[in-house]
Length: 398
Picture 1 (cartoon, rainbow, N blue to C red):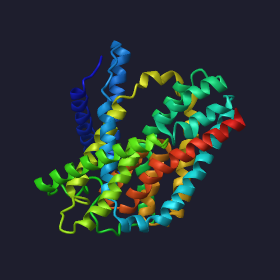
Picture 2 (picture 1 turned 90 degrees about the horizontal axis):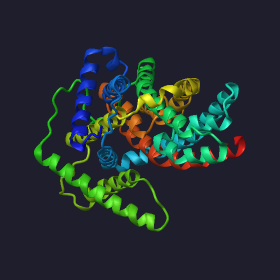
Picture 3 (picture 1 turned 30 degrees about the horizontal axis):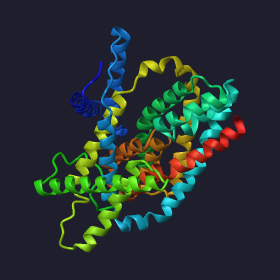
Picture 4 (picture 1 turned 30 degrees about the vertical axis):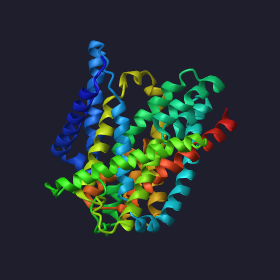
């Protein structure tokens, strides 16, 4: 059954309301900073799975809107990133990039070792490693045919998608509790006086959003996306093709640090409740559509084949976030938020990481540094490094 874009949006909004309602009623979900889109999205995907199993009805959602929401979200992150935060994040950004590179290697080593111990083909360990987890569904689809053609893994796409799907869910569930553990154990507090990058704090039931700032935010976001996508067309003509959301992120950073300086009397909408609200809505709807459209029934037969691999990866990234990322980033409040976000990054995708950090900061306070460092590492550095590391591993285990 094909679902129209309008109905897809309506269902996604209802999914967000469901997640908010359940998180409000089940206090432990909010206490452990489980993102509301994850709560509602997972339950909805299970419900659609039951409909398929009982009645044979499969829903095909319109996903084009989801991709547009991703552009809006990353553009808002760029537009909320000030030069002083970027400068302050220079060293931590480098540290997190190196740590992420190291973890890609550890992630594949873990997958290969577990695959070998369980009698699976060694390339399956890479497929259920950084290909599907740090890379997500997009990287999985891009590499699956290579595993079929070069390594004889006929169901490579199914294994990869199963790993990416379960990883997405696990990353959204475990990141918040890890950050909360670190914050409470070390008695950490936010030192930032800036407003939240995404969303509003829990105790603020109402927030002032004025007409002019909201209109300016929409205008600036639209201009940044237009310039970013056109820039990417030009880059593609030179052979340098990047995902649109990465270029829009950088265009947002460029505009928000140049325009207010050039036009000092101009009222710029970055770091306003309006911009934060747009970021929160676009991220929530993106995750809601992503999770509610998961075809869980296609993963059941493969669950047993990948569950041990995923559990091993879950244990590894938990220890890595707590004992490596948190310590390397300085054992501060920002470090705890980054650690919680990194779990979403290493098991799911950059939006999952941001959703984790949003849930954390809504309870404990803002962390502007985390919201610029993690997206930059996830949206740019990991994708480039991952491709090189995947190929290197396949050369040795294939």
